[in-house]
Every structure is written in C-alpha cells, then in structure tokens.
Amino acid sequence: MAEVEQGHVREVELMPILVERILFRVGEGSLAVTLPKAWVTYNRLNPGDMVEVIVNDGVTVHIKKKPGAKDTSES
Image (cartoon, rainbow, N blue to C red; front, side, top):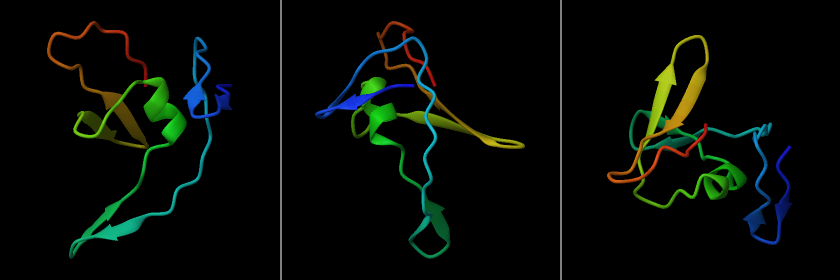
C-alpha cells in the first residue's frame, strides 16, 4: 500500500488504496466526486489534466496521456 509522507507519496510498484468519498452536487443535475490526493500526486496529475472515466459494472478512472508524454501512468 502506498504511504503518504509530508505531502508526497513514496513510490511503490502498485498503489492499492481504499477511500470513501461523498458525492456533491454540481449545477442543476450533476453529481461529482473528488479523486484521492495520494493517487493524484502519485500519478503527477495537475489541474486541467484529462482522465477517462469508464462506467460499466463499476467505475474505472484512467489517465489520458499528455501529448508528448511517455506511457508511464498507472490507474
């Protein structure tokens, strides 16, 4: 399991985390949920970066590759 230490994440091969999130209303009819800070930091995401949400029996979040970036991201 990844360990959070003073604002950064110690890198590990896999990052299994379990968190609970509360849905909140955005606008008239949408709901939103936040991503865990440890996961965002581990994947070096910034505001404006794109993620892909796949909804079937569950929900999966994938990081969209940035133009010119190497494929080193994990979900």
